[in-house]
Length: 484
Image (tube, rainbow, N blue to C red):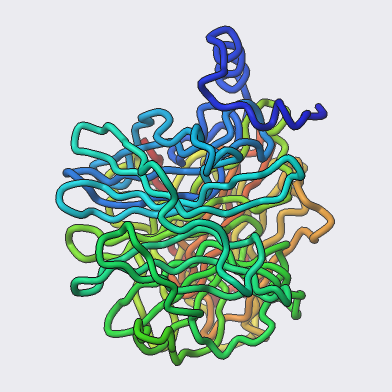
């Protein structure tokens, strides 16, 4: 379907009950709807926003266009949870109604101050020539769930030296000051992140760029997120425009981090190590983190990418979010592991220690341990198998290369970017922790050393699972759980 500009920029409030009922009916009867991942009721979901613990609950918002699976007028949709596992949709939280957000309420973040949740986000405003002005906007949620917008942007337009591409503020507090880091594009069409400061969340001053050693590193940085963990400073961001290098940077856009010393908020300086990708699968972007009441740093990402289609679009919906992941640091790397709360959703279990193919269905969790012998060998797992379909993860001991292959995973999206993703591990592959849903798989390797996140669209009959090896010296132990 071809969308007109008017159709793409309709607010949710303009949707009739008849239209909404039709969309809900189509989506409700669509294949590949997820079981335990956050997904849109209709339309298109993308970046997670405003992730916070507030008033006894986790609050998570996401970018949402309700009318169909295209990037149209962006709203914020609101979900809540008491345990990071079971999420309840609360409906639209931010609808772009004001002139300064006339063409979308884009990504942003939240911070709890004086028993209220302050939400900072980018409002896109376009003129009659379709020229964009990015405004940084503020909305405040009270304990009763009501939201009131500040009557004007707290930062209007782009600062001198930067293009219209300035967006996605991530806010935090340090002592008596507030800061946000925001993605930007310089006038020479290179990407960076900017740092702003404020004493009251209303009046903001540009400190300057985050001074990194990454020169000419893409043409735009999206969705930055700065936090401190175990005495280190960590900056997550999504650079656009990186060229593929071997197995690295294979997706259209990347998502990764730099880790080093704490950010100097007076001048934006930060010494750091290399940029590392957060995920090595096909579908991961725009992650956002928050801190739990117990101090854990939790990440949720968009299980999708900009400018890429998926088969569910023909059923009026697209994309989902990842499961929540706890971040820790080991040496100079971030580790990602599924939050412990997910164990509460485990049902009946099956133990296995051989390569027999078993029927695990469409939705499950599996944990597999490999103990290889001294000889070089190949081993791995086949998932969502049938006579003609399989999603394969293969490890080659000789090269320490782990490869995810979705060439036979059913209906394949984005084939122009290849059907495999690979990574060379720092040590042999010993553990694989798999979270399978109707149309996605997330695989955590070696206790979080690496993650492969991907959408897959297999047929209804693809329910098999098995391990494999070409060396009988490899010992295999595994457990599979149903997921409530």
